[in-house]
Length: 104
Image (tube, rainbow, N blue to C red; front, side, top):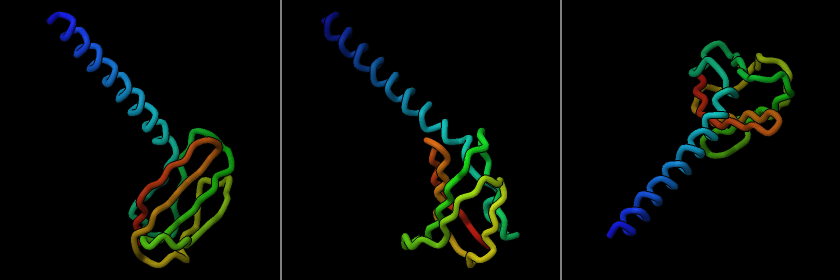
């Protein structure tokens, strides 16, 4: 009986540690993002911990690529994109962030 509780406790502990490790990994992408969202002035500002070159991909809800660019700047002009809901993917070095983008 004691052996059974030992294994159950060990099992719960291991899964708790695995869950914590995955949660920490997903939070590392929070440093790579953009603002404002929703966009109303045709410009977004990229936030990052480093000054590396960033690849920006924007897709519509059907998966069609609307914009692809590479920039070292923090500011990106998206005034040519019509109003709607999009998916933006920002890649910088080994980091990638994918978010919903709303253009008004």
